Length: 218
Image: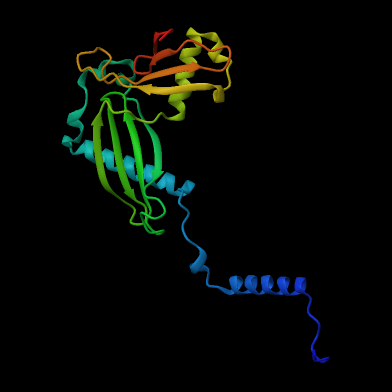
């Protein structure tokens, strides 16, 4: 028989009581236990990575590092090469859950140089505030920066007007690498732009190194 001195607790009330108890325990848990760095870069970390990468490359150039000896000499004579155009194409956090600790904060900064055709890949330790590795590879498939994508679309749209009026989400934009060392476009920043949604468009091959459309029906 239930003791009359004890209050009657309904099942629903018990569930809510348990939930509130869990929330109370969570609320008083030390902040450090739950506050783990996110597996994405913050805006501040992205800026720091870019600053460290740029400073490191400036030092390497001043010291005439052999890192740049892999460059493709003839690209310096292209319009973009003469301007010494260089662009960071991506900044990404290295590692993923299960492969690194939550406190590891290393970023990869990828840069493409039009005057050399080099893709420069710089690893930055964000916690230590320093560059830990720099590599350079010529004529490598490299992600496109947003500015490069937009420029390629503008050039392609001059050859195929329908592309100029197509929303960005409806376009395909990919890089193309000419791997034949004897080709006059070896190392150039080549991009293909097209639309597949009806009506489909021709594939337009754009050379950002020369700011030209190479083929309007590629």
